[in-house]
Picture 1 (cartoon, rainbow, N blue to C red):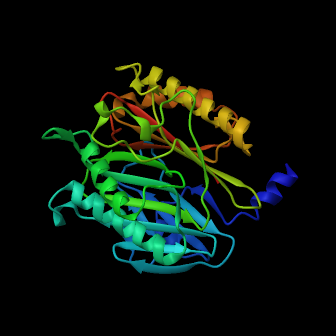
Picture 2 (picture 1 turned 45 degrees about the vertical axis):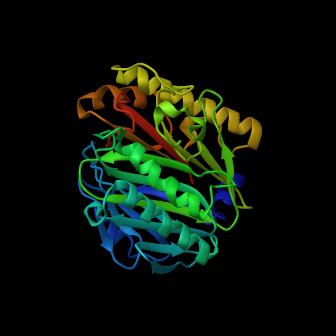
Length: 335
């Protein structure tokens, strides 16, 4: 345990969940890469630093701020729509676009990702490790496509110009909100992380065409070796085996299948990449996106029993998964 603690103290940043409502106040400390709150509406809280609210309300009574803190001094800046921070080793970026300023979601998505790729090119942090994508009405049908499929088209438009993740796509989450605004945040490094796929699931970038004209561009997880130790960034994970949704209409069974997927991912990662953790209970944090608030009690009870005795922080958020039949999605981080 002593070696693990010493190792973690040398890593370029850490992520902690604080029982604090005011993320702007938390970010007044030194060496803050980002401070993230959770509310019904996405909001920029600091024009000069990545301090913001994600447009997803917490479903439990507690207030939390997610604090990304650096071991070393942090520099802040702006590029196009992005407010960013960096500490010489990792870059954190955030943007919030008003969809009404664009002809459609595809153009908004392309613009957001074009700004991201431009920043990576000029900053020297060329390798995305982890992406979060939030926008409203994610499963709403608009013509032949739903909005998630349209978002993926816009992302692919940017990739076609700026490179197709030749080194491996990053881990990512895409969740639907209840309020307007296309919100992205991300971390990037100067060297790529290691892509990790799940033996129980078809890789998202290999999904058949029935799920849209372009495949989602993300890995099931990214493992980053910083030299002094490793971080693990796990994408949004659901009750999908192969590429098919299981347990439709049963949120408890969908959570159980999701946990099996997470355990399989970590087991495979430990066997192939040598992870610093082997089980879900060892993750720093889980975010649980719940489609229907009425299913929260059964989901929360099931997960609390599963995690009994662990120190994993769990945030339950109101959010829509990218398939309408999915009722719960879970992401994780070890940082």
